[in-house]
Length: 194
Image (cartoon, rainbow, N blue to C red; front, top):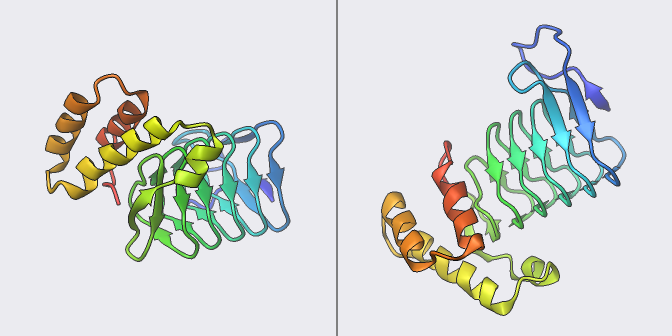
């Protein structure tokens, strides 16, 4: 079902859309709801693969090359950056953001933002290292992967408060586009980071 009415009590019948990019595969029994006045549209990028029984709610924004394994579900207003993979039965709460190149293990719930380049597992969901396999497949060098790993060691394992950790990352990695992406993503989080 593509472009169905949003499951949002505030929806008043306004004209809204769903936009789906090129080469995106949508398998059986999936549902994609159109937007509400909040955003006006639900968007899905190019080259995505939405397996059976996946659900993308109203006003979601899904990047390019994203994979949803069977039963993966996005609540309203969620955002998923490029190259992310949500394993089977992953449930994402409304307004949550999933970073680029993330892989989330199967059968977990996501109630806070998941920063880029990581593997996330557990209940509650937590950082389980960087997405080494995915990053290798996408051409990230060993130096880039090590830099990302070192940055997350500072953020998740140094015992620093969020603002202190971000300041330290800015000081230690001033020229890294990948660490800048991490910093920007975390700084913009409204729901908190896993």
